[in-house]
Length: 167
Ligand code: ADP
Image 1 (cartoon, rainbow, N blue to C red):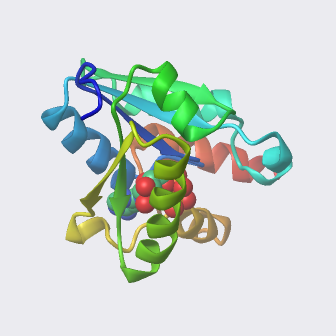
Image 2 (cartoon, helix red, strand yellow; image 1 turned 180 degrees about the vertical axis):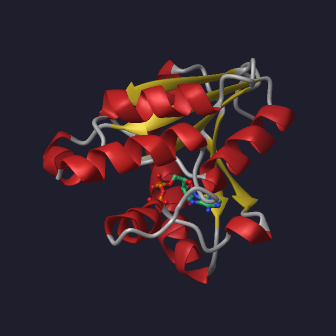
């Protein structure tokens, strides 16, 4: 058996922007594990394709999780298993929405296991009220003037209005 590290897990994602569905997974993880590191992917090849910069995404996650004492947000641009190792995490926690998420996540979990068998992948089933929610969907709705205030934390909703208004 792999050596037991501390009770740290990593919740990775692009979080462009963070939604109530992400916050649900982060909050539930923080109730189960000692420490949760929210890992924000900074992919330099996709920089012009994100609505918010990695720093902005980090700031919004920090605002939304300020009430959770054992959660911190960090930006990473290396391999997820490397980032997990650096964070002292023994496992990666991800949310699973539907069958469509399953196929991709199945592949990612196998690849990550091959890269580092010491890092476990754990999947948390999305809460029903968020199982339809994605960052992409929220951005599309907001682009066309839809009200997203029930789907994302209040600072995110405000930041989206500002950002999309600038465009
Ligand atoms: P998205 O798919 O919304 O662009 P990310 O790539 O940032 O989100 O996803 C980060 C993690 O959060 C993934 O594990 C993803 O499955 C999970 N996730 C995203 N939206 C939800 C949701 N509404 N409920 C539960 N988990 C979610």
